[in-house]
Image (cartoon, rainbow, N blue to C red; front, top):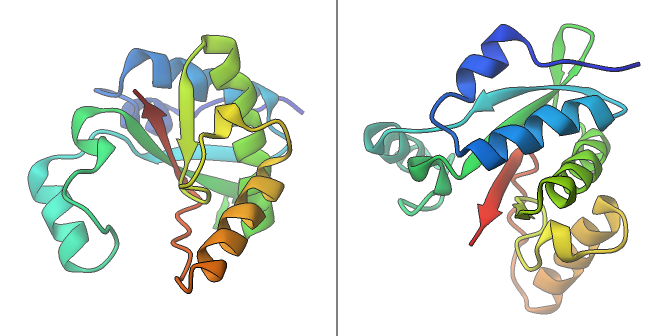
Length: 150
């Protein structure tokens, strides 16, 4: 089945870097699971509010300059937070980013660019989790988040 972006998702892409828009537009045609764009460009005020409530960890978010998107997986009409479904989206985003020719980082694997990885997104996320635990730190998993690098 081929999915397509909804008008709402397309609206959320306004102000996002054109290369990243293209990656999302290609990825939706390559994924095995449906997804939508829930956040693209943010204002400083929106970012401050997210940091204040703990939903973001930085005021240096790539959302502020249109270099990041947050995607939500849908099962039918319902949003889902199941990690394994975001692995599928990340695999599609990696393929699309390589096609567009941009470097992409995934919020479930902050240690390495998704586009520099040859394995599955699931394996990349697990490598990140293992790395953080070996350092005595908690992994910060933001599976809906994808950002341009460089």
